[in-house]
Image 1 (tube, rainbow, N blue to C red):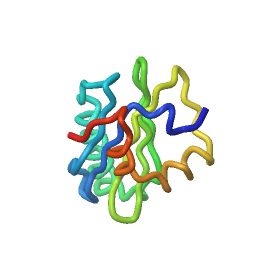
Image 2 (image 1 turned 90 degrees about the horizontal axis):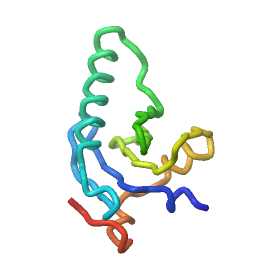
Image 3 (image 1 turned 45 degrees about the horizontal axis):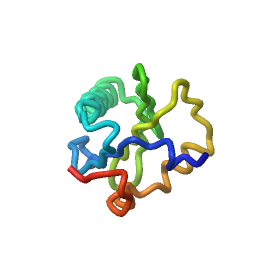
Image 4 (image 1 turned 90 degrees about the vertical axis):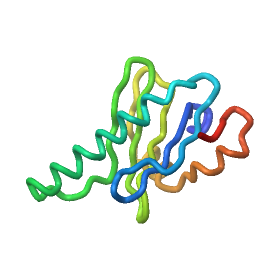
Length: 114
């Protein structure tokens, strides 16, 4: 099974952490996870400025049924909502997420753009 088969949604955030666009599957029409990511990016920015913490390469937000993997790209943040009971964050998954373009989901019939 590919990583793409596990995706339930994806969101793009600008460098300041504001949501730009997102894609959701019919399985997860609820977009509250985008708000959670927005808040996490805000907290990250606050911690970084207050404690002079280095920028993160990735972060994971664990939910009851889903997990969100957030990666920092050169010009944006990308959050990927993943369907897995337990998420094992491997270097391969992070590398894949760094290369993943959420805009490709616009061509996938499982997703709608919001």
